[in-house]
Structure formats: structure tokens, C-alpha cells
Length: 131
Image 1 (cartoon, rainbow, N blue to C red):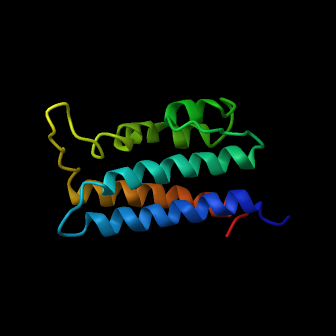
Image 2 (cartoon, helix red, strand yellow; image 1 turned 60 degrees about the vertical axis):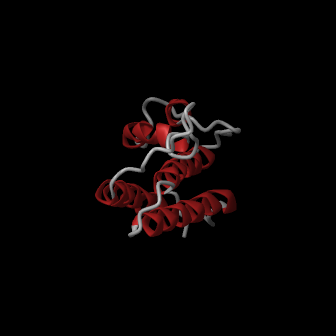
Image 3 (cartoon, rainbow, N blue to C red; image 1 turned 180 degrees about the horizontal axis):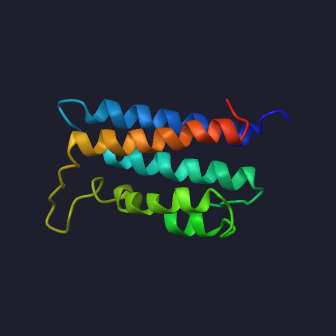
């Protein structure tokens, strides 16, 4: 069965976001590396949803996206822990009410999260029949 081009597109975007996160985590560390981790997780979940013929819409909250999957779906418990990355969508991108910009997570944390998402990406490429 040929790969769904939308699923393939999402998975390619996951790889791009992981690349961006890793590059931004290299010295000098850029706080926006965390945002790209959240984006990679979100797009990975959307790839699985599209593969399952579930339209994710414009939703960005990881927990809401994961709950769109049937509870018996084998991907549900793999993706559910990624909800910890939801705050990364905004925490490091916008100033506080006092104008302070928060420093991003340490490089080691970014790289560890990226490695975990990459494992899921590789599994998705295999199981979802996408390059």
C-alpha cells in the first residue's frame, strides 16, 4: 500500500522539527529549541491520527490530540506521555507579564527528548508505511 502523502508530510515535518531542536540546543543554546520539541510531538500525533482516518483539526494540545485515538490503539500509551511537552509551545516563546523571557531547558534535556521522539518517529515510519 503506498504511503499516505499527508502522513508522510507530517513525519517529514517531525524530522525537521527535531533537527531544529537539536541545532538550537547546541551552544549557544537558544530557548526556542523546546518549542520545536513540542511541534515534533504534535506532528507525530497528527500523523498517527491521519493514518487512523481521524481529522485532528487545528488542535495543538497534545493531551486532547492523544485522546482522539481509541483507548485500545497501541499508539495511545506511547504518545500520551508526550503531553509533558505541551507547555513548550508557549513557555519559552513569550515574555512574562514583567517582560522576562525564560531560559530554555538544558541542552541535555532537549537532546534526550529529541532522542525519545526520534525513536517514535522511526517506529511510525515503519508501522505507518511512510518514508
